[in-house]
Image (cartoon, rainbow, N blue to C red; front, side, top):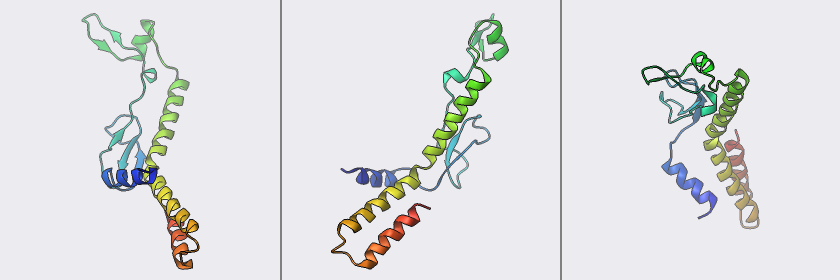
Length: 140
C-alpha cells in the first residue's frame, strides 16, 4: 500500500472536515483541535509534567498543586520562561496537526499532477490543466 493509498484510507475513516486549532473554554488552557462547526474538541493537548509545579503532600495525606506551597517545600516550580516555551511549542504543534487535512489534499493533488505529467503523451492538454487546477485549489 502506497503512502497515497494510506492517506486516502485514513481520510475516509478519520474525522472529516476543516480542523481548527484554538483554546476552548472548559478544556483548560491548552490548545484543542476541533472540526469547524463542532463545539467539543477531538484532540486536547495536555501540558507536560515540567509545565506544572510538583505536588505538595498536606498533613492529612492529600496533595495540592500550588506554586507557593511547592516553593515552600523546596519542590520544583517551573519558571515563567519555561512555561511560555512549552506553551509556544504546543501551540505550534497544534497548528501543525490542524493542517493535516489540507496537507493530505495537497499531497493527493500533487500525486495526480505527477501522474498527469508522467503520462503527458497519453493525456490531453485539458486533463493536464484539470490536474494542475486541482493542485492549485488544494493549496489554497
